[in-house]
Image (cartoon, rainbow, N blue to C red; front, side, top):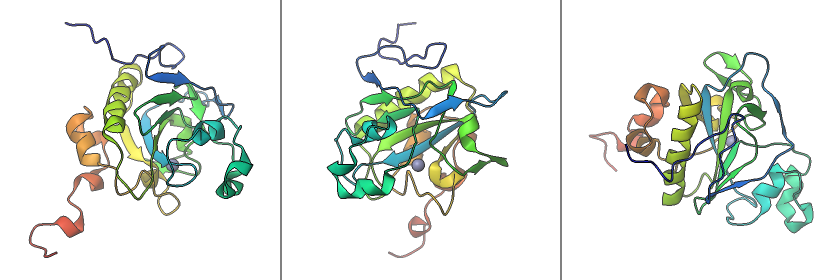
Length: 211
Ligand SMILES: [Zn+2]
């Protein structure tokens, strides 16, 4: 079989091996997964700092506890938060990794999946630079697909959910513009691993209904 020159690969600790598209930026907001917990769930998010502005250094700074609070008035709202995710996929498709996948990142907060609380214990978190109000980029879907494949090779991931699914009412990301049907078609996940309700037609698109 031809060698896949561009495929991502994780080392033993769960860092992506050096790759031109990947930057490593260690976040202090991490700790050990509780005894016996391995990642079985992938959680997708969106984030933009300031909200709905893209391309700045602020998400990376925020996850490294280095955000310049004075750079924008809105940042006062997140002054004391200490959070992280394993990965950020920027609008350009560039990936920043903050936490190795064998360790616990602080991305999900109060959450529940499949009867279990505290999804951080048993999940990997990917942030997509974006918002609830506009589409994600082609480069982001492409890189999410490539990253997902590497994660599945290394970990026994049995489900993918949005933050909105594991913290309903409290969180709304990755939001209505995230294309779950495209993920089902193109990213190689088994159908039963994806959120069922997202694969059904949305009510306003149901056949027989007027516009
Ligand atoms: Zn989120």
